[in-house]
Length: 135
Image (cartoon, rainbow, N blue to C red):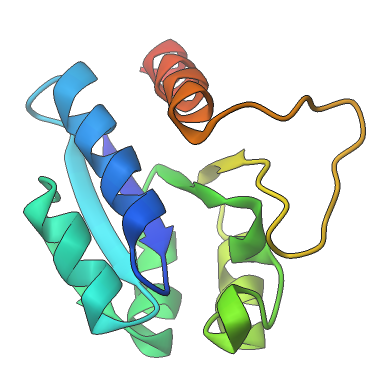
């Protein structure tokens, strides 16, 4: 299974996701770090991603090459992450046939009704559980 972890800005969320995926999923699981910037990608690589790439074209080209895409809800919202996530990136991610498992973080001014606010580590645990179910 190939999983793309998408993050931007400082890369902290992508790092936390990558660490948990690497810890709880089988070793043969391939994790691809896709950062909106080089700093985010580097942090995810240090956390255990197999390979990584940065920027708009890297995201657009790679989201169709994976089975699962993970990140915050903002990765499907154009201009999120303080403008780092471009409309082309958001469209490519949304159009990808890959299963999307997104954290309902309200940083893009998007509230998902019926979802309860939980600390990031708990949300990532739910994400890992869902990916294990898919495996």
